[in-house]
Length: 400
Image (tube, rainbow, N blue to C red; front, side, top):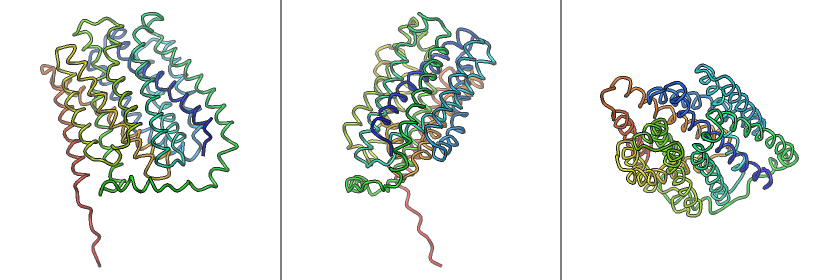
């Protein structure tokens, strides 16, 4: 549907979005800790609130984008995010910070499903694999770069740079989205009238496994939110882990970015190698590695052990995310709505991970590792769900 020029522009928007959102959200926890004295409990509650808002809003946002237009959704989203962060940066109060986070999250929910749909619309499986490979590498690289340089930006430009730098980038995105919308208007109507090209390779790939493609999509929709349970139980406590290791702001930024770069490397590998498509063993193996390394990162005491665990953790969550996005876009034609489902599942994990940690710290304050074991137990529930979906017998309709 969209020309190569428009899709290239979507990749630019995606990379900037990844950098801006990661810079703000990851370093928001450092800001809340330093400015308002937030402990791990306060940061986990903040992360849980963000995830709950995102999980609900992004489902509706995907449907809105599908019906009203991807670029309209993008323009509304970028403008909302820019004003939300500008307001939060100008008035440094706790209530304003929470309000800014809420409106920023609502705006963000309009962006990711739309970008995924623009890249994936009316593509064969082979081209979809390539385009989603580029898509995943771009956003993972942008996120890793933001995590890596964020500490240095805060040291150089001050604590409020985590608001004003992303707000400026969101305004830039609004301008680019407006120009891309005008460029795509002439080609969209003509492309809609043409059926997608047939591709025998699509059918052969989907027949690799006796499990139907729709079941793989559901399994990925389980694995990805549970991986985000682990991610978002981890991110809010990274400042404390860095403090335990006596790392300064710049070193803490480097330390917290390791798994981001590992995830980006996983995306490059999975982009080039398609053997994991519709293979259960790769999905479940990555999930098990991710769950084990999550616990190691939270309770391990050696710096190099934590570095190694973050590397494996990033590879595991990379395959879980790639699976969810690929199967969501490969199965079915309503890319915007499927992108919304994919992101809503992700938001559920963003909520559940820190919520489990917050409840553990609130009701079991004398057990400092309770959040680790609680989140690990939740990950085991996700593992059981994967096996249930894989090996359950399909129900047979009864004859009258």
